[in-house]
Amino acid sequence: MIITRPRDWSRIKANLESIGARRVFLMGCGQCATVAHTGGEPELREMAERMAEVGVEVTGWTVGEVTCHLNGTRLESRKHQEAIDAADAVLVLACGAGVQTTADAIGKPVFPALESLFLGTVIRNGIFEERCQTCGDCVLDQTAGICPVTTCPKGLLNGPCGGMWDGMCEVLTDRECTHVRIRKRLAEQGRASKGTLAPKDFSTALKPGAVDIHDRKAER
Image 1 (cartoon, rainbow, N blue to C red):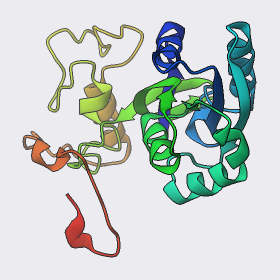
Image 2 (cartoon, one colour):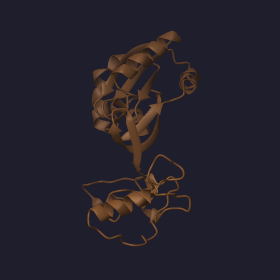
Image 3 (cartoon, one colour):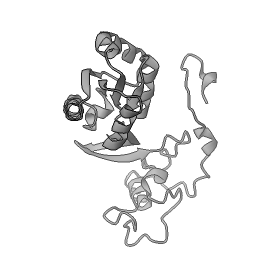
Image 4 (spheres, one colour):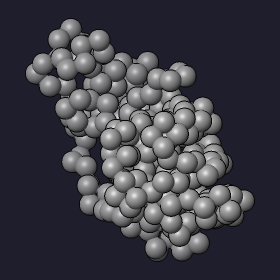
């Protein structure tokens, strides 16, 4: 899931002031931002209260099922068309993809209320860890399902750095070294290390990515 955090309040205010917005519509996300406690109903109600404190009227709000789904966001916005029409701007409490999708779906100035941080795993409620860089050249098949590039603070692909001590990471000192974990898990699974991994092909991470499952040739 995409992990987000609240955007600096002064930046949100500046965005609204830049267009003289006195009325806003709030759009949340029922998926990642709700799980991250940054863009669900409680956070939208809190944002509405904060807007009222600075004299900005909230014309309405909704938590879309999946804000980064273009057709779903278009449908959700139609349900609240009157409130959106009455607003000067839409404030989106979702990841950057959700903000851009909303901007595509709604003919109003759209501003982000969150910062997108990383693609992560939910360790437990409210605790998230980055696990994937979406590089397009996955090595998890060879590393027992542990990404060395993402989970090693130094991004090392092959083996620990010189700072590893007694199996522990020198940067995140409360964690076991990623490469020690990889070796241990491979051994637990009765698998041998593949040795040195080939350099990653970062050309596969060309941006912007696009996939059309109806035409695999459209991938890039």
